[in-house]
Length: 310
View 1 (tube, rainbow, N blue to C red):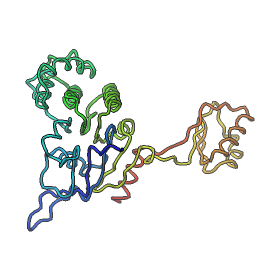
View 2: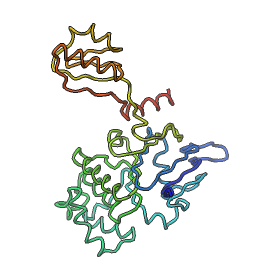
View 3: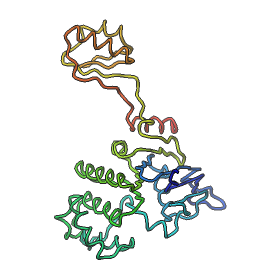
View 4: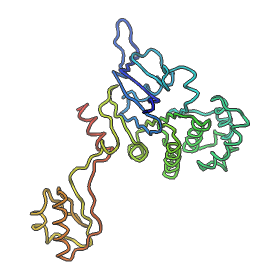
């Protein structure tokens, strides 16, 4: 039997600023989606697409919406389900007079955990995000990246079943982003469901197993990373020697050949690839690698959004 989704949204709409004489701004317009247990779900879209509004509706922070929105099978906004959720908001502000350890203790207690329970776990979490040496420094002394790491831990410290992360790697350096990816992979392996909203599409491509692309409050596309980034039909040959003298022979075996300093790219099927390999070997050209070119998530995202907003 399939587990019910942890998040279920159906025909969800939200309008800001509506008055008798004013239509207002439609932030969400008939959005429907489901997120299952143990998945890492990515929400993408340009500024103003409605991403943060959707998260805040699910957390009960935005009233006045229409449609259906549920967490753990209950209407969004109820207190019970929210205790099972962790949240890292975009541009969060932590109390600067607290230390990193004190902030984690405070937010963990807000989420229903005891001080004693938290104190057995906070040191390990601080070490996990590379903040052990800064545990007793005031938050106002932290850099943006350091504050973001503490913000991430406060969303996870109480061991929630579902985590909402709004721009989780904002301001974080490459080492910190790697740590975040590793943490999310560990949580997913333990069955935690993660809902990520981010503008860093490469990070989303690395972290998420399913993605929704939102624009002007509507879903443009939903699918797995593989479904959203299909093969282009083009293949790149990285070679140990230039092949300009072979251009004519290569052109007869493939389409739209483009020569480069260290090989070439072309449209070619599997049978054609084998013929190209035979030709190169017969001419004594060493092949370093052969790779199929796929669309990146950024390519797919830009194409969808530009077609929606020409």
